[in-house]
Image (cartoon, rainbow, N blue to C red; front, side):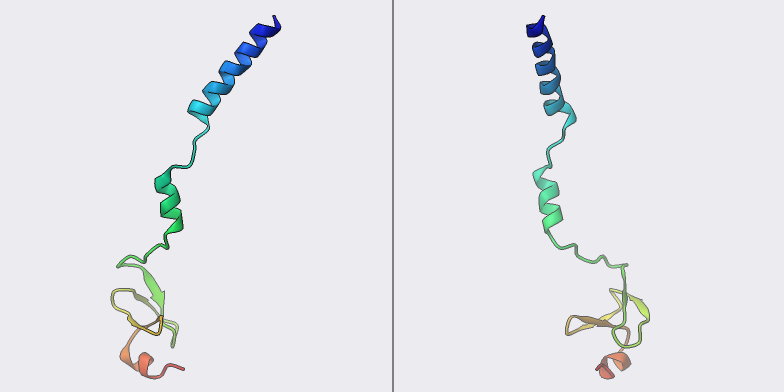
Length: 76
């Protein structure tokens, strides 16, 4: 009787670890470790005036985004 109960618990445990409990995949670990790059249509804030502009139209200078050359020239 006890042997049957232990056998059933063992089978349930094996099924749980094989099918139900998911291990984190290698691809998801790599994706989480990489810094997400901004997409072309993402909006960023101008470091000078605070206006949001698309990242592909923004000017990048000293790791800050600017909406125009005027804001770039008046930076702090």
